[in-house]
Structure formats: C-alpha cells, structure tokens
Length: 359
Image (cartoon, rainbow, N blue to C red; front, top):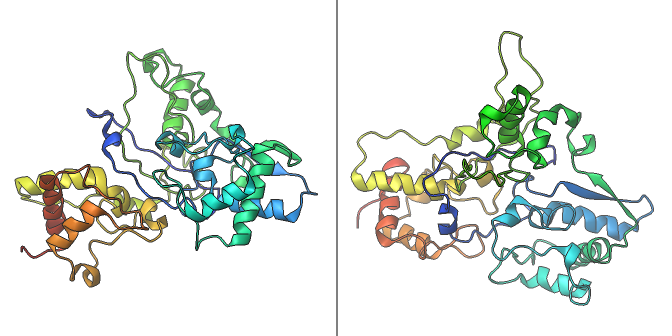
C-alpha cells in the first residue's frame, strides 16, 4: 500500500448523531488498515541518522501512525473515535515511556484499549527499533529531525496547491456549519472539495456556528484515490463532479446493498441493522470485499461464500454475533444488539446472502 491514497467519509443528516457510541469496540490491526488517518505533519530524519532509527521510523509509519499520527501526537481521526484515546507520545512521561516499556506494550497489548499485541507481527528486533524511534524522536525530541508536511510529492501529493479552495475548511478558518448562502463561489467549491476529498484526514471542521450543525453518520465509506485529480477537467462542456471515488469501482460495487423484494418485517429490520452496523466490515453486499474489509486481517467472512456458509447455522451465527471472534476484527455485539435485533440480522443474512436452515 502507498501513502498516495486518500479517502472519503460519507455524511448525511442523521436523526441519531450519537449512534456511533452504540457500536462495539472494533479490534483493528493498525498495520493493515486505511492509509488515511495520520496527522498532517510527519517527520523526516537527517541523512546521517543511525540505521536502526530509520528502520524504526519505517515500522512506525506503517504500523503505528493510524492511531498515533505521523508526528506522534495522536491527532488523528481514528484517535477521535477511540476511548481511551491513543497515547500522545509528544506529551508522554519519559520516565515511564522507556524503550523497554514500549516493547512490553507491543508484546502484550493494553487490554481495554485499541492497543493490540504485535506479538507474531513484529520481531523482537523490530519492536526495539520502533520503540527507540518513538522515544528518541517523539518523547526525547532528540532525533536530529526536521518537520515536514505530509502532503509532498514523495507521499503522493504532487501540486497540493490545487486543493487551495478547500484549505480554509481544513484549517478551521471556515466552518462547515457556516450557512452556504454566506459563502463565495470559490468557498462553495472548496466546501464541496473538502467534503469529498479531504475530510477523512482532517478535522470535520464543524465550529461554533452551531445553529446549523453538520451531523455525521457513524459509518465511513473509504476508497483509494487511484491518482484521482479533481483538476483534470474532461471537457469544457462537462463539469467534473467533485468526488473521491473515481476509479474506485472495484470497492464501491461492494458497498451497494442488494435490492430484495418482499422482505418480511423482521427482514426489513435486519436489513437496516446489517447495513448500519455489519456492512462496515462485511460490505453492503455481504462479501467483505469493500475497501475496509479488504485490508482487515484476517478478512471479514464472505457471507455469500457457499464453502463457508454451508456449515453455518442460525445458532452458530447468533453465537458469533454475540461473542465475537478473538484475535479478529469481529467484536462481541451482545451489549449493543438485543436478541431480537440479532435474530433480525440473521434473517436478513439468510434472505440476502445465503439461505440458512431454520432450527
């Protein structure tokens, strides 16, 4: 995967803005998921940096930045959804956060948080390399480093200035809650561009003008940029739609729910519950082949796979939903969904993806 990817979060008016608080804790291996949620700033080490520090940086930038940010300050979108939040290494106590302490955390994880064990993922040598990098660069701030921006050609952002109309929204100079009728034409364009191409990596930019707040849905839809360039106008007579999904159809296709006629009342309820909660990982079509599902490890189950589903029963599926599956991204939903809701989801899965025999 390459940092030249960017993503989009879908948004709409939602009558339940706090719905995300009902979602169970998702165990996500930071190594594998969205190259999208790091902070705006990264660090560049000097050419004479010791090799072990450079090696630690490479591991950190691939495994850790998703939650802790490229600058080590945990100012990421992922961090804003996690309770407790990830550690801000730039404010960490150097007496506690020694390389040995960090290695122990990498080995064992931290129960009750998003910090998973990296045992079996990183070697002991790699753990010590990334621990030394974090301590030296972020905690002791003595890595002979210079600050740089993430949006560089090397990181896949040539001519970042072409997004200039969106900058006021990314920096908080203009809030999304500001009435559209008060914006200039370029600001309206910048707002559209920010919402379609920038928002997933930046603040949601909802400020104190709260008479018309933006209410966000819980479930993001993420797609790769695939070198999408909004400035590449196809023809003067064909205005280019500002979207971050161009060339992403292999993933987008799996985020389209199947159309099913004559669903029962419980099936309709299950459809909404599945699409609001389960489709985040399993995709709207149940395959798990959406962008997010494709990069979870292990992959979410393909609920249309006959080889797997032929051994599934309603009781087994209900137990899996209730209890989750350890060491995967499948959490336990028993404190979130009622038995009636779980039954509704199973009915929908059986109707939409693979028929499950009734016990």
